[in-house]
Length: 291
Image (cartoon, rainbow, N blue to C red; front, side):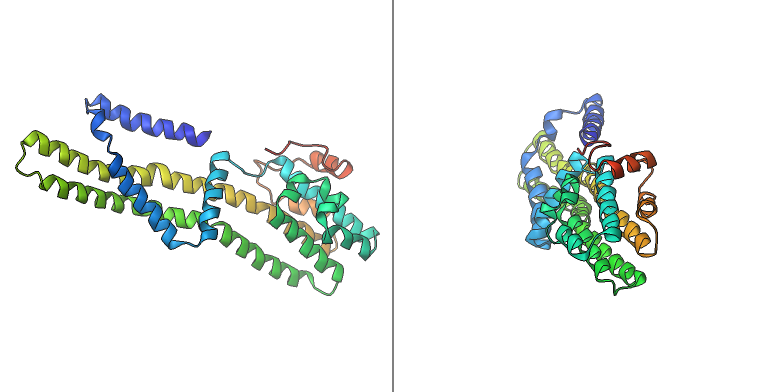
């Protein structure tokens, strides 16, 4: 919604200012200029990326428009799963723990946290490192180094749409110049026409430059900023898991280990201690529902 509001403000200001100066609005309707700029931009993007990045970019844009950032319920689900696993690590046998991490879809622990189960990558991340803890041979600093490497790899992959769409957005002003030059070439073919005809053709050509700049700085780049915000906040879930499990490996009881994870959450979304305690007593039963 916030993206649409911003877009309305931009277009209202640009078009409103132009019309207030008595500019003929019909002169701005140049669909073929838009076709040249948009088509060249999309083609450049497709040529620069593999199919996985192209698909993930569409997903990233949908997440940006839907503001798919983790809510309190998402964090509570993660903390609830971690608490249950760490509690069982202290009290139950290896076989009982492995039953949860080998088949999380059938696990009573994971079933209380639907937002975690829905995130296959996060579920796999949790299960992999709980499995390493069960083995018992790895030291906490070794696990931390491995976690950092994997988290950085995940973040790099998740940020590929941001970087690639940003590159296309930065190219739009230059692509707009291409459209403008093509328009000038067209206008020169009518050099013998009256000035009013030439003026209209040259004006149409300059619309290409305007569109390229408008698309870059007022549409694509703001969308890229939203993609970065959403994906960075989604990535915070991995940091929560890392800090909680490392604290547990270093000797903290599950309740204290959860606090290590909770403190890494931004104050804007961080659940209260009371909410976390309620989650420990009643997994999946409290807090804000996932959007």
